[in-house]
Length: 179
Image (cartoon, rainbow, N blue to C red; front, side):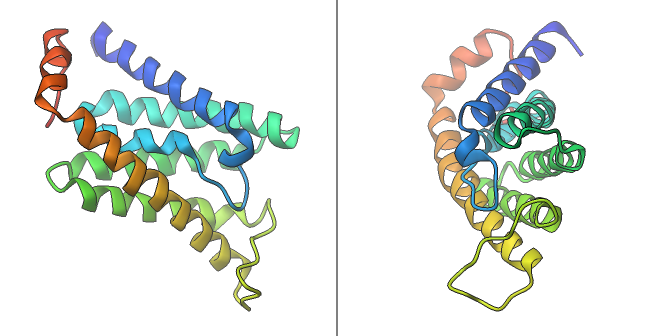
């Protein structure tokens, strides 16, 4: 890896983790809107620097955010949440020619993986008193919130940054762009 790639990864990790921590009340919990996840679709544009940045940023964000919001570290959330981000950004990168499809699949990946374990640590939300298993409620909650953050907000951010007038300056700095 060259210095530009490492620097870009570090920048994405910093922004992601800062958004998780500063927006902890809405970024962590059974019902959440993780605004930091709107950065995940940028893996279609920037590739591995964003994939690495989102993975590391999730680790730091979940660690510090867990202390801020809950007063403790949750190593399961740090490890598996980061794995979910890695897989989600990798899928977006691989499906970069079909951006919205990649964003939808990434939302499902995050919802299923994170919702699949988070219910063990946090009570599941009560959706209209539905008689469903807690893990199902958590998966539904996180998938819906991920669809908003990734497939709506993140997709709009990606489309905005894919404008030729913005791509050219990025390329002029010697950064690799995949779209």
